[in-house]
Amino acid sequence: MNDRMNVESFNLDHRVVAAPYIRVADRKDLGGAVLTKFDLRFTQPNVDALESETVHSLEHMMAEFSRNHSEDVLDISPMGCRTGFYMLMRGDHTPEEVAPLVEATLNDLLNASEVPAANEIQCGWGAHHSLEGAKEAAKTFLAKKNEWLQVEAAA
Ligand code: ZN
Image (cartoon, rainbow, N blue to C red):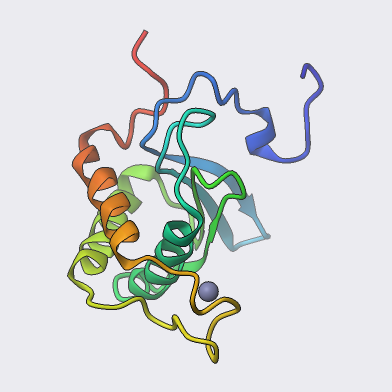
């Protein structure tokens, strides 16, 4: 645990964070162009996790709807622990800047009547989805919007 690891989040003490939150997980200067990777944490690590179908639908919906609001989104991918997502963006961004993007994306999700691309042609497991689960998780995340920028629990 004392050795520094290659992956930024492996150096994060997941016991001290307080979900939900938006955190910069990495920032890379590619020589002129900068990429920023965000940790969008929905549930408390090692306490709660999203259902697999919920994660999958959130992934589809955030991937599709975030691009309604930004040209800079490169990728939104679920964490294997199912407690949140990584969002990769072109440019040097802060959590303050991307919070409105996340909010707009999740509001689109709440207004959607179906999960985009939830079929065998466009997805690797088209039946493995939950629109209701995604909406519930989005509502829970949005309800704590005022806590998004606070990553660690108050001392
Ligand atoms: Zn899929």
